[in-house]
Amino acid sequence: MNGVSAEKEGVGGPELSPALRKLAEEWLTLDRNPSTVQEIERLRDDGDEKTLQSLLGSRMVFGTAGLRAKMGAGYSRMNDLTVIQTAQGLASCLLEQFGSGECGKRGVVVGYDARHNSRRFAELSATIFLNKNFKVYLFSNFTPTPYTPYAVVKFGCVAGVQVTASHNPKEYNGYKVYWSNGAQIRPPLDSDIQSHISANLNPLPTSWDTSALQKASSDILDPLASVTATYFTDTLHLCYRREDNASSPVKIVYTPMHGVGAEGAREAFRTFSLPDFIPVPEQIDPDPEFRTVAFPNPEEGHSALGLAEKTAERHGATLILANDPDADRLAVAERSDPSTREWDILTGNEIGALLGWWLFKNYRDSHPHFNGKNVYMLASTVSSKFLQRMASVEGFQFEVCVYTT
Image: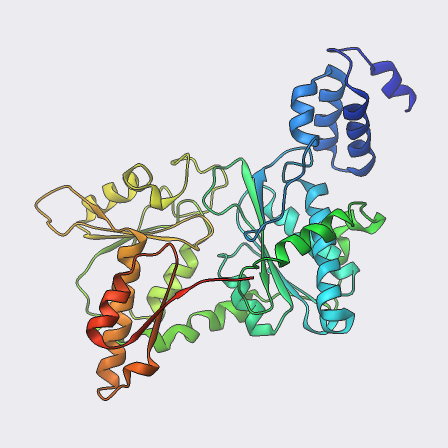
């Protein structure tokens, strides 16, 4: 213990237990972020055992959705050190799974949303991969989460990382991982990654230095322009009535909930020849403070869609589309009776049923002699079985996706 620490010992609150003091000193040895270092120093000097125990006594556990926690100091929070440890563990796991040659040739994608610290966490992760001789596709700006798994498949990468806390409040951030097939990981990969994280907790001296990302190199690439150019054109085969879309009289209000979805939504509307949507002005630009909604999940209903409903009423719109802040969730509301102020918010099952019906209708129209034995629709175990009923009437196949180990 250095002289400064000795002078501070016992100045504030009660003495810490030896085990907790050891955890605090370990953290201060590993961490190089001045803000989180100061936070742990203050708690240590104040003898705040309860808070230190909550921050240092347990570690975030990597699951199938990755990590998600409040930002701040400690092993149970999202911060520079825990992100570095996570990236080191993921890199180790990928090297074991694919080998150094494939990781260097195929690489990883790293994206991020517009939350506080998201870009910083993404750049730290990219630095770890680069130092491990991975090719790295690092987006130069915030992007919707779906861009990352799309890029994994497009470029044939071994994995992708998206730094985002999705629809959680502003205090949170997270770390999503997509495997080489563009899908979120599933057991036992999550446990395997966690084991590799636990075995790679000590940052290397180079782990904090992101300056290498600024140097011209064939191993660090920006996929933003390429992904933006092809993401929507690759969906054109799903546009069945493009000529009718341009003359649609339906007025649509859209909100990205202070997130990153607006540009993608505009491009989707252009690609499908739809008239421009009416934006919710207070929510159209990215804002990590989420100033107009405390819990930015559009699926929460009227409490989250209040501004969108008011915008729709001002413009005489009858349909609302809303993304969550990282644009991987969609909420839909409609006012079927313009004479009332009531909005019907569709459930996820209702949206899924409508999409399933629309896909099947257009497939059948273009394949009048289709063989129902070769046409399938799938649903998760927690989804409505509406499509199963539709399949029994229309003659196509329906299956529930069940993962077994």
